[in-house]
Image (cartoon, rainbow, N blue to C red):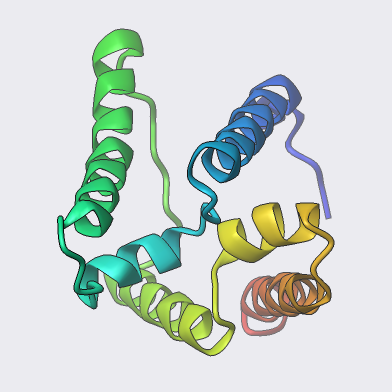
Length: 147
């Protein structure tokens, strides 16, 4: 295995992690809710019946913000090269499997891996170890065994 030093971005990764951590902490402190994307999106697909519709409004605002952020970044900084070494079928299958996994695991990487681990949740530790292990095994199988 070789490490691609030309594309090693520790500062960008650190900045992204800090921003995500701060956003998750602020969300819990301000709203008392876990910043799990699958739960937020799931709440839109199956909304709770509230008197004022606030539950749906903040979820829509959150999803719109997630969609707008990369567009604003692209306008400010410019387009960056995106390279995906997979077919569209593989990308769709991967997305469906991730969606299925988040339903069975009662949460996603942001809910369990960021928020759950920071709250010292044993369930989130098990979920994070499971999805990280499955990811490592999948990459190894596809890149080294089946290649």
